[in-house]
Length: 281
Image 1: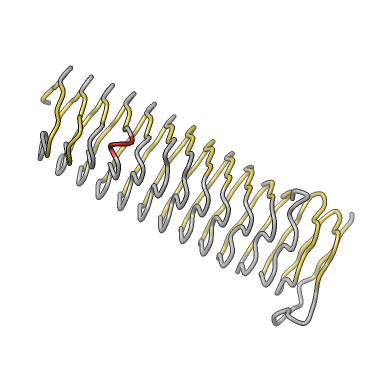
Image 2 (image 1 turned 135 degrees about the horizontal axis):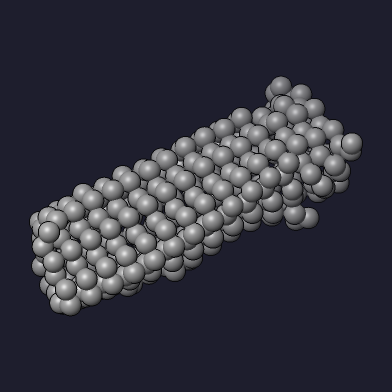
């Protein structure tokens, strides 16, 4: 394996088409496509400042490094990438990738990150300023991830989330096959038009959650006081602990909770309109 230690590069494609390469204390200055069309890349204590640093890379590990704002659109069309103890401040990182593993990664500039990716595995990460994060992804596993950014997880499939805090308006729209355990989900209009979403011991806040859903399941979840007009036109099987401010026009299924402020069943309910709603012990 070739080793490059303590050097600086800039311009266009300075390390183009390199294979089995180890970089340590390397700075990639302004330029483009520093490590394009590469494989077997390891980067330790490196700083990326130029655009498109790791495109079309098959197998890379990045440790204790930083992708600055200038390293925008940094990891596209690559496979089998791992990041540890790293800062990703570059927007639009991770596009059309297959195989992403992140551990203890801070993404302070997560706008339009993780688009059209598959097989994402993240633990102990923080993602901020992340509007439109995780669009059109298939195969997502998150554990102990804190997310702030609206419109997250739209059009995703095959997702498992555990012990996370998700602050995201309009999240999980048109999502399919999603299971969330022991997490907090804050944001209005949660999971509209989704299929096969299952929430287990989750806390949900803000208005009009879980409407237009097909195959929705809730197990021992709780709702915030601002969580009203829930389940409109959804097919649902739900047990909810505590109080729900209001339920509106669920399509079918069963809902049981400790108490309900208001049940709204009006002329706009959709067939079959036979959801059974109960409360109390």
